[in-house]
Image (cartoon, rainbow, N blue to C red; front, side, top):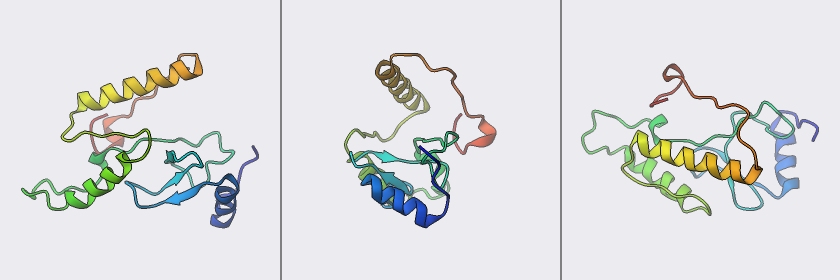
Length: 135
């Protein structure tokens, strides 16, 4: 499709045209598709933008005070994560490990590969310098 400009009015019109909605009560501001899927993206307007990336958001990128023994500020995060995992096709587990996250990502990659019928053309791993948690 032709690119939709990054201004909010054009994006809102495209979201409405598709029957989508804005979802700001989950872990991050997202789109909710007409099928109920949650779509997060790193650009203002992913429509017609081949560089747009969609992504999963893990809890370690949110500010939980490591010096707070009761993790009191985790309560707001857990509520948002709980709402997210109640959505169709989502699940969660707590506490989790880096290995468990890797297993989930590997399973997701297998499902996508099976659906598309082809292996990925490339795999990109994040560097520790670019993320708040493990790569």
